[in-house]
Length: 188
Length: 188
DNA sequence: GGCAACATTTTACAAATGTTAAAAAATCAT
DNA sequence: ATGATTTTTTAACATTTGTAAAATGTTGCC
Image (cartoon, helix red, strand yellow):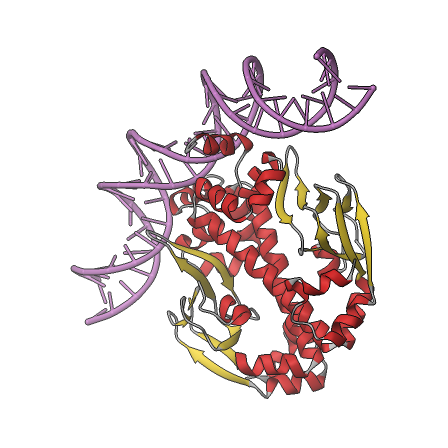
């Protein structure tokens, strides 16, 4: 199970030694569709890598639930505030399909960051890649209309369009479900 | 000039040895108001720390210019794509006041990341803090109306409200200047 | 199959924000 | 200070998006 991970882009830059050290702390877990693996308002002790399946992160508001992230095979998945500030998070993460995940204890990961410079830089790269993707989305909201955001998302994530409820995609794109329906009604 | 930096939060977690090593690669530069220090579409070779002054990052669209980031004293400032992917960026960064900055060559910083585990983890923390702040903003756009976003921004960044043109703040908040004027017209 | 639960679309209407243009206010340079 | 330039506000109107509710479609389960 874990050996297959070696080939995904996330680990491709790691040397064999660093990979071996990191993988010693990995455990493989499987959960059915619908499982919530990260809860808002809790300090979550694990860092996950999604080996197969689809996940979403969302926050609850008064009348609404906003999905702001999707994960697919190869995505990393963790409570931002637990990971970064060791405090309770704001996101729930729910598996939208039966999934296989690799998990690492945050305490172990932090120890590796202190001891292994290659793994520290690997962790740096993870944060940087998430950062640039998140900022891109913030900027896209300003420059692109909802219709274009939808069509680009559909083109770039065909798997998600097929398998994720439109209500989740609507909030991910920053519109209501009604608006998304209207967008989809135009152009076939 | 550089010694004063030691006390800002950005460096507080660094040991003295790491601080000394990092500071060997720092140079202090001063620029007048209006200077653009990072250009979109260029690979920018420096990483900056804003010692004093105010900066903004923006991208140019067809008819508009969107400001998506403000920096104040203590902020780090760099071309995301240059830093993360070694490729041309999408943001311009402009100094809104006369400013003093510390700069480090990206090539030097990358070398330090490979050689000094403490500095590698310092770089990881920088990306993580930017990441969590950026995601917060994305989520706030969904949950909070423009009026609330403005009032919270005003409360948290009094210095910026005072000294930054409202047209920049409007695009930072994700509304037009006209809408921001309307928000300001209500409640005194 | 057929019912129940849930998801999506549609409709009608309301509210918020955008657009354009012009006036008022503030800022800058000489 | 004064005129020029830029920024901010205001106005009228158009457009987009939201809200609520009903209609339709889909899924899963017994």
